[in-house]
Image (cartoon, rainbow, N blue to C red; front, side, top):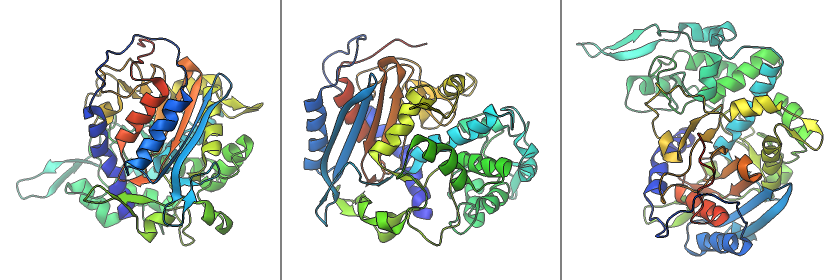
Length: 428
């Protein structure tokens, strides 16, 4: 679990190179419809493999109601000589978070909770959570009650004040001592332990990537009385026909799991440890079902989830969410007073909705990732990515298995999809 949390934390550092990468020399065009250039995307995926940045990659695009592109390059398992295929399973890590958000918002639609309800109304342990206010003259931590309660809204937009792993600060040291996300804890034990870790800031004051989505999973479990993994299978995966997506993968699928590769000090990819290979998906001793990570999926399966969002909450006659709920989730929810946003600005011009980054304006310069205002997306620790672009009626899924997170892969893939010059609509 420590390696997982350190990998998630590496995402913080990884978004910076994408923004600093060499920019195309041509000025960006103002707008225009996106034309999918299959050869350009093929070349980009092949270049990622030939330059040793990935062992293998696959990409799937849906546009204007049909499949617009599918392609692969390289190997799912380089050592075994297995090519990337359409049915290759990938560990998607934080791309689990949007799934969890959809599950919780289904319950919101049913009136099970209000977005501005105190979290402690449903999870009382968080009523006693304190805020870390520094150290006193003797070096002892100062803990105080928060200015206001943690709201359900806060756990959907990462403004609760939670952390996401061990480190040098007092809250991070308490995290290390209590170890909330240890694999042999269930979600209830996770919640009891997280509630004892001091908050970094008063709720609503800042944006900080955190374990809040795991709290969302706990809330789903508490409100329904159904194990979180079971709830998602019954209410999202099965209705959408996502037959290969799961936290707990059966043994017969092991051979389809892509190998995980890690970039060494020399910049070359090496096969990651056995623990990384199995991740959370193939651990029979695991008790914890994280809301923030843990699903393994295929390009086709996750595209069904993305298409549901693109189609405003329904797919093939099955409604998962109301259109207004999807719009709410895909709208920037950060108050303008939330100026401290950690590494989020490195994702582009925009803010944060409910478990999605939300693009609110055109790329500000040629070095920023290509995309369209109104799009919403998230990515994963192993450098996976998906996005939904309503302006172009487009959804994209990009699967690789590379740690630590490499945002330059996303920059290059987006340019292959949109072209170097694309800016899209002006947005807000």
